[in-house]
Image (cartoon, rainbow, N blue to C red; front, side):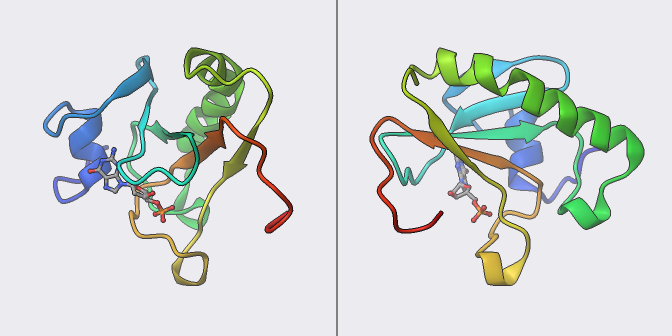
Length: 115
Ligand code: DGP
């Protein structure tokens, strides 16, 4: 399902341009507009759901596919020495786009600030 008011749905539909790293029928991976690391990619299931709490069984399958494909996406993004995955859930986590997405961060050592 697509939400016509959702920016990531519009990116998945090609209505808003993005720097794509990987795409298939289930998911899109594209560069974050405000990178927090040398490589910062967003992995987005194409079906719209805001948070894990709203996810149905079919969307859970899509999320599984995202994780299965992340090693390939990381390689396509040039990440050779590891990466960090983050999924923000809700206000306290700082979630700003309410279409579930996985942050894929890397390209330099992360340090020991958070986790
Ligand atoms: P979060 O805080 O987890 O909801 O992260 C949302 C991310 O989405 C944030 O890092 C910036 C990114 N973002 C927001 N709008 C756009 C956009 O139009 N294009 C791209 N490429 N990234 C976007």
